[in-house]
Length: 271
Image 1 (cartoon, rainbow, N blue to C red):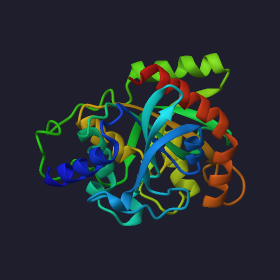
Image 2 (image 1 turned 180 degrees about the vertical axis):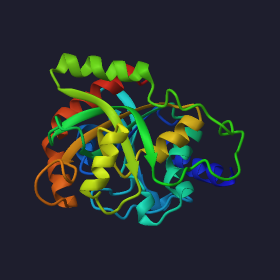
Image 3 (image 1 turned 45 degrees about the vertical axis):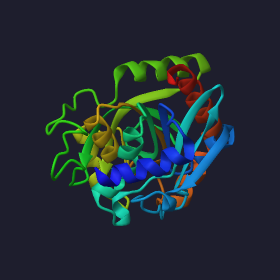
Image 4 (image 1 turned 135 degrees about the horizontal axis):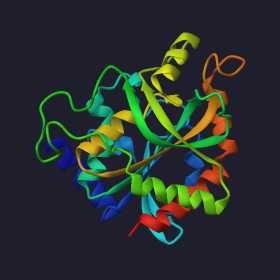
């Protein structure tokens, strides 16, 4: 709690009141910031207890500004468990922004498609997740000021917010799939056998983020909606080898449609 207060003090001194809506930009999706009238920004390294992002496509900045007519906060990049950080460190930026007063979180990520009908460049609205990371950010002492010891997980990705996203996509003529996201440890991509297992478990897409953040934010009673950019087909589903450069390149192809979707969502839900 002391760490949260220290980080909160620095953030609010920089930005004043925290926007109610926070957007997390996954791999290759940082160009949304070009649509934002930036008010101010701060690097993770300047905020107490925030760790540095080390992955390509994740610059590690907190940005506040106007997206259309609405004031929002953006996390340009995130921390991943596979970077060697603890679960507490991975979710600390999200807990901090919620502690600062943020209420609604739009989480985005780059993911591999498992469903046989998926194609690179599509968007998937996450309806639920499967935690296969072998860890949980709530393990350890529970702080009652953050949330209950045993939080309900039946509505992590709030149906009301999902409906807003679906309605916007329909108006924009944007194809938006719905599906279940499997969160894995990484950083190696999955084997074909592992992908086959995940499909049998009910997953439609797979990635190495989002799940810890959603668990921590749900614990704090925040509203969450999440969208995956399907940047590649998982091993055994598509052809060829997998690499991070292709993930970043594929994300760029969907950026314009993604940006329009996010902008209208924020105009609807932001205060």
